[in-house]
Amino acid sequence: MNRRKKILVDSRWAGNTGIGRLYQEVMNYPPAEVSCEYVKSKMGLGSLLSPLMLGEEIKKSNAEVFYSPSFMPPAFSKVPFIFTVHDLMHLFYYSKLHKIYYEQVIARLAQKAKKIITVSHFSKSQLVEILGIPDELIRVIYNGVDDHFLKNEEEFVSIRPYFLYVGNRRTNKNVPAMLTAFAKARIPNDFMFYLSGNEDPELAILIGSLGIQKRVRFLGFIEEVDLPKLYKGAHATLFTSLMEGFGLPIIESMASGTPVLTSNTSSLPEIAGGAALCVNPHEVGAIQSGIEKLVDDEDFYVECIVKGLARAREFSWEKTAAETWETILS
Image 1: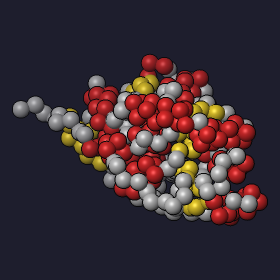
Image 2 (image 1 turned 120 degrees about the vertical axis):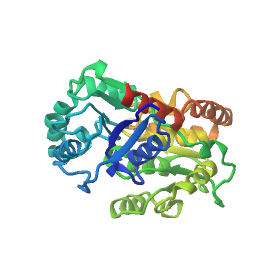
Image 3 (image 1 turned 90 degrees about the vertical axis):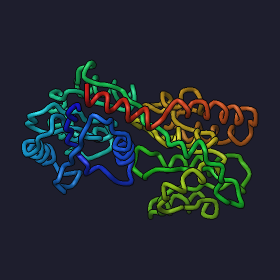
Image 4 (image 1 turned 180 degrees about the vertical axis):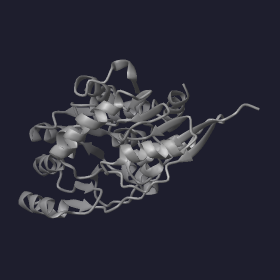
């Protein structure tokens, strides 16, 4: 009987986030030849001391390889390590301290990795060009989409047709521009705009100034089990971010048979693969025209559904997990 290879995994990333989803799916498909143990420290994910803590955890472990589903690599690792950098958002949309930490700590430790995984060719190009990571050190492994989006036939019950946004409210998400474009779009007034999460004061002021209080609904926290129905019931998904490393809502929406309006920048056209309507996210007028096209052009709308379903079938979490474990064990 062959001895199983011991892998130490940074399990602190488990949870209801994009990174947590990747972690969960990779851990759902472990090869028979691995034995996993997990980082015991409860140190916060944002702690600047994480690399030192991970180095100590590795020192105490008898694991042969360390793996993290996110951007924190270990310092002073006695074993080969692999970690995933989803994007370089910290350099553009976070504090100056985040930028310095990424450039001076993460980038330097990354050079010592056995392999760095990233989720799009756009993110890989940023790692090479901005952080100076050698091209050959980086492997692109796309995220997946769960089968339940493709198989679901239930729709969220809404009396009025609606556009949908799923995501957080960070600056790169461009939510004010989407709301403004929706308000200006020459479409029937019965169209609603549904957003995940709760209303915040800044958006409330904007919505009031646009006069669309009765056409916007905040859905609060959305359970994973409810997402397919929400996508399926939507007229279209709006996801015109300024920057993304991947953009999971694009393929989740496509897998649900719902067209997507997204951006022509960063990783988004790469992930859309010609199956979504891509516009300039910096121009409210371009987003507005995209919304109008998805309401007015029925032939184009149906084309988006057909192409989107085909594109979504190219992604699977099982494939993501298999390629990740192959990288860990190689």
